[in-house]
Length: 276
Image 1 (cartoon, rainbow, N blue to C red):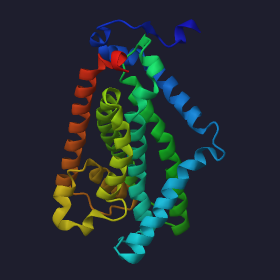
Image 2 (image 1 turned 45 degrees about the horizontal axis):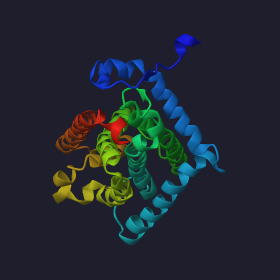
Image 3 (image 1 turned 90 degrees about the vertical axis):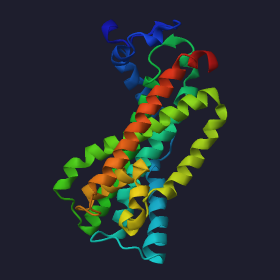
Image 4 (image 1 turned 60 degrees about the vertical axis):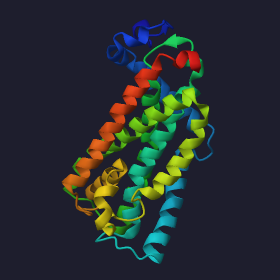
């Protein structure tokens, strides 16, 4: 039993700069422990449990279907319009949950960060993992609607994990920026809900990017556009068709966010214990 315990060391100045990535692997059990703790805290006293994860996407699905499908009359291709919206909501909900969790993760764990040494990157990583639970619940809703309309995805479904990874990379990259900034400037915690509200309408959740042919290249600077298009391509039998250039641009932007987020996070990490 003693060998399976999570390794914990006393806080030591300058230690975070030595063998950092090896330490990240060595403390992997701590990552799992933090993720499991957050899951239990989130759903332990909830009357409906994980069913709460269905409320927001279900309401958003109904609103977007009514506005874009009924009032605006936007085309959905061969798939029912609610499936088009839900296939866009899946990556957006995953991104929003992972981004929100990661951005406030360090401040929520001040008691741990100020006392012991471990790679601080474990904290936002564990919070991103929690978002996968909500994602799995919404995925069940998609399966139910596909069964209702007898709409079965084709072979493209095997590529879905790649676009899940793209969504998580985007969320982690932006989350690392916000969590490091929130430690230093607590006002940034109020910026997160605003960014998510704006991002929801700047991303093609309620409509297809094929409705914006003249703006599609510029639109792809938002990395979530590539993720949403990829989800729909996988789940809706190839619609909308993926453009390699536009998808590549979203991938590059997502990788840039992750690289810059890691750089800024590591730069500020040495000061976390003092500032927090």
